[in-house]
Image (cartoon, rainbow, N blue to C red; front, side, top):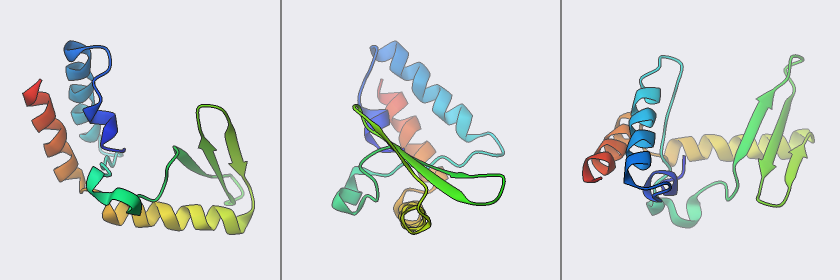
Length: 111
């Protein structure tokens, strides 16, 4: 998640507090990995849009990027591989799950 997702207050303080509490609870699930991409990444952040990379039953990959005005489904193996590489790079530069949860808890405390 981009850091803006936890810093931009939407719905007021009570709603935001509940959202942050839910993120911490969600991060505790055994199959979940929650990482924040901090503002400090600046231009090194891999994606400007939300991107989903899906593995199909035949093990092929597709990616889907969405903006406010359109979505883009990519099936070309070269393009999807580039998206996957960018995703892995983002994972290495994002905060660890422990540090991400700590940041969320600190913001929650400030509300």
